[in-house]
Amino acid sequence: MININEVLETNEMIERENLDVRTITIGISLLDCMTEDLLKLNQNIYSKITNVAAKLSDTAETIEREYGIPIVNKRISVTPIGIVGSSACKTISDYVSIAKTMDRAAGEVGADLIGGFSALVSKHMTTSDAMLIKSIPDALTSTSRVCSSVNLASSREGLNMDAVRLMGEILLELADKSKDRDSADCMKLVVFCNAPDDNPFMAGAFHGVTEGESVINVGVSGPGVVKKALESVRGESFEVLCETIKKTAFKVTRVGQLVAKEASKILDIPFGIVDLSLAPTPAIGDSVADILCEMGLEHAGAPGTTAALALLNDQVKKGGVMASSYVGGLSGAFIPVSEDQGMINAVEAGAITLEKLEAMTCVCSVGLDMIAIPGSTPATTISGIIADEMAIGMVNQKTTAVRLIPVIGKDVGDTVEFGGLFGYAPIMSVNQFSCADFINREGRIPRPIHSFKN
Image (cartoon, rainbow, N blue to C red; front, top):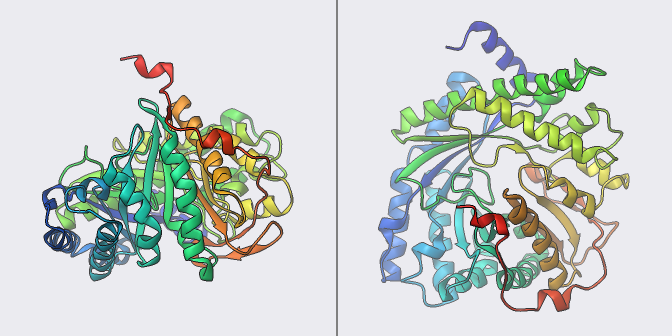
């Protein structure tokens, strides 16, 4: 039971510390929509999404009114379209038609975003998978709500370097197609190693084949709450620091559990997981970088940053799992550049570089996220950055991801404005030495030896 003190604490976190439920995400299986007839497939997909998610927006608004908890986004994730469209899609335009159907369905039910325009190619690519990947630039520039992800690597399968090379080219093509909007559609594309089946956060959400017919997943965010809690223990020992983060994460997760169960009851859809991820926003005080500074760093990126982030990530997870038996998804701390004012400040001060960010991804929830780079960056260099991040995830048996934005027409020293939750970002410097001969090799990097432990 939640007592009156917890209610008062929760109100304080919401009103003054930027606590919110970042998303209620309905995962929907489209496996029963599959057919060889493209027209029928699109009809099936539209009907399934609009039927299952018909009350999504109303439910979120009802919970907001009843409990006073802000719910920022309503989202949908579906079975990876690389699987769903494999029989019906014969051309790139066929896959684009599915993206447009997803977009229309999401708009009909009031969802902010829909994820699952995805391919799982960690070992090899089928002809259909390659076709979906090649359709991504057209699919994302012709829709407003669709998000795309590609899983390129896993600890059990290795690293598909053919897919890595292709994704570098696709990302630049997408950047060019949306250059009139500062290449903003690149924000809707992410590549993964070890992508989880139950992630409610975009752009990487999809409804994994291990999931049931439908499910409610909730993503909770509270960097401001953690920052405020740590202000009261300045100068204390690491033991006190860790305990404070754990207790705060526990309280935040309880809020997510409450919302998830209420949404599950109203929608009559099973509750899946609570993803407790410290996902920052551009709002002052809602920053993961500011948490690291509160621990004692002058700027994120200073020596000690990776250790501080490791501590934060671990204690958030420990507190979360005590609050709910169903903590899942990514859960931990995100370090996106454009969405975190503290990270932006660190980049502008010269305290943090792309290489330091890569080191930090060894211990954070995901990886290189929302990083703007020069639009002149070669595709092979982008593929090299992706390969490095995928290797970290593969060898360390963790989820890693890359969401880069090559901004056509802009260079180091420029700034790009995305607006809203996406914030703004300084263009970051990229290593100028070539990795083309490495990237242009064919095949894959084999699985690491620990994958044989079964």
